[in-house]
Amino acid sequence: MRVGAAALAGGIFGVFGTLCFFLAFATDYWLVASDDCGPYRWPTPTTPTVNGTLNQTEAAVTAAPAASLTLHHEGFFWRCVFQVEPSTDAVQATLFTNQPQSKVCVHGYLFPLPVAVGQVPHPIYDATAVFRGFWTLLIILGLACSVAGAFLLLCGVPFFSHKLYRLGGAFLLAAAALFLLVLLLFVLWMETVDVRRYVLQERGEACPEATVSALYGLSFMVAAAGVPLELIAGLVFMLVGRALLASK
Picture 1 (cartoon, one colour):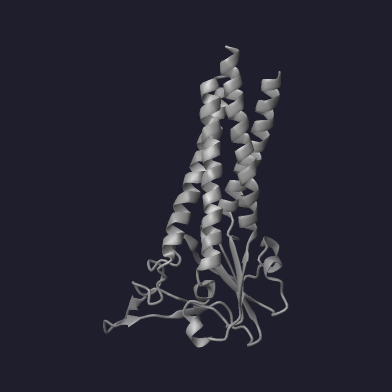
Picture 2 (tube, helix red, strand yellow; picture 1 turned 180 degrees about the horizontal axis):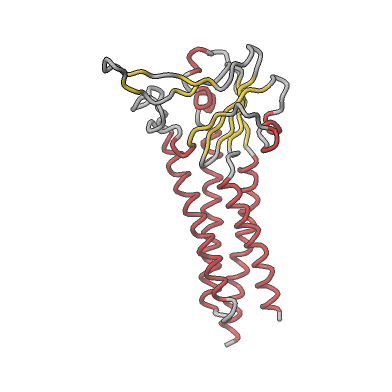
């Protein structure tokens, strides 16, 4: 009876922890930033003209007035920018219900690598892009461990298999450890890298006095909430497996 109750509690913690991880992975609010450098322009891919020269155009987010803020939010899949009034709160403006149609996004998992749009290699290529590579690898491995642990536990419930319980718990612990590394790596990137240069990109040369504000977004907070839930679930299932083995 106690083993069943512990397994149920562990399952509840594990479900909520896994949902937190997937929500953090699927949403693009790890980094929320704002700057007052003016409208953001994405360089479009170069295309050959009739005489064989390359033509490169730029797409502005919007024809914003001079007194405006450019808001950025970024996650695994997308990096988005749009213009708002200077008095707008950055976190509230980046919520799903408050975003304007003028928002422009590029694939986040390619940024700031030079394989994004524009010249290759990118003239402002950031050597700290290695942070992005490890962060991407760790978050994918964490999700894979979380899914594998959940699958093993579902298979172990009908048979009360102590091996599946312990193996599933180990995968959940691994997922919690990997997402903890994801969070620590992101904090390290935020605190040690020149985030101002990262946010402004090429516009930094034209706005040497621009004010940039960078915040930890809601996706980061959700992932942080999922780590202790997944950790507790993993420990519970490890103990349940041990109790089942001892009862035989």
